[in-house]
Length: 513
Image (tube, rainbow, N blue to C red; front, side, top):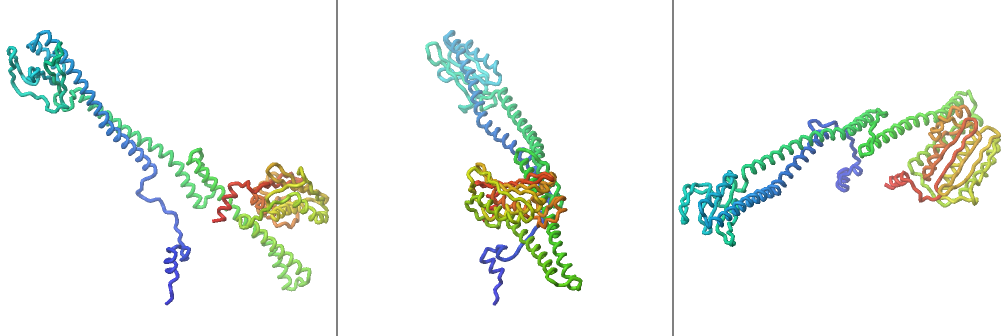
């Protein structure tokens, strides 16, 4: 029985798409309906934070402030009881006992604090005054009372103070409590506590409202640039590559906006380059192909003889096509990083000098003067480079100089160095490059209007390849030119390969993956 390949692959490899050959693609999901926006969520978060803060504050207040407040009211009540005991002690010493006049002094405390109960006991614990019930004293032996006392039975609801005579003996006790409260709170204290909690509740409500308002405006300020980025991304997705967010700033969102715009600019540039590359390649390939086709058709129709001259024309155009394709492949491999960089310690002076010597006869046949110039201090310049690629880069610059320099002109190739870089320059006395065209010098197939008027035979990718070679060496290449006076190309590559930039490190890391 035949086995089912996808099922076996799924069992062996966990059902991965790589093993089964399956793939999928989903378009971007539209905005979900009936969902809270980020602004709403942020405003609610602010409100919940305010509510939690108020709740925590109320709980802390109920535990800490409430106990402190009760301790404060108890202390006040204790002070009042002690004051009453001291006053009664003075009267007791003056009268020599608990006389009606002394006991009458206790009523003054009851009148001054109508919501506070007062009870006075003698040394034996007998009640001699209680403002919660009616009573009268007859002589020195007893007290007649009417009614029922409302003294609280819990010890925490009552404060006491001893009445001590001048000899230091306790002759009685004063007891105080608050009417209608088990926490020794007078009516004014209770009102103060209630008003405090009301004020706290009002402050919490105001804080929640303010938090919602602040959260709304803060969320708007945060989501507005995010919405702009989202809209811009949607415009780019729909084909508008010129759309930009315009978001700027030093914070994370500002940096996101700037990075997004840079990415969009790079994407637009890459796509334009891709379109232009397609057009340029088609144009460059069409010319030799049309020449080949026209020659072949003419030979087939008998218009042209199939002799060596016309066959050489076909071979020449075919070789041109082959060189163009090879150059494009080389440029593509350099850009993709697939070309291996064979770095070795190389004397750049010797490398360039020998190259100039080998090219001298070719320049002489073109009626040009070629000279090498050593600008180093010791006649050598050791650098970590790929000699084959550096040689190719210099040859491209020399070929470019030869192609656009008139007869009897000069081309000077020089090598120098500073503390960190090897410097190679190729200077010519050719036609030059217009100022506005210089930024496009290293673009594929680009030629200035002046150079297009010349029959140069160039492929149009030599300078692009040179730039990629220099980039692979973590170096730089610059051009300085003036129409009618000549052009100078300058290559700078690090002497030591250890000086790597971040871009190169990231590219190599991606290649390893």
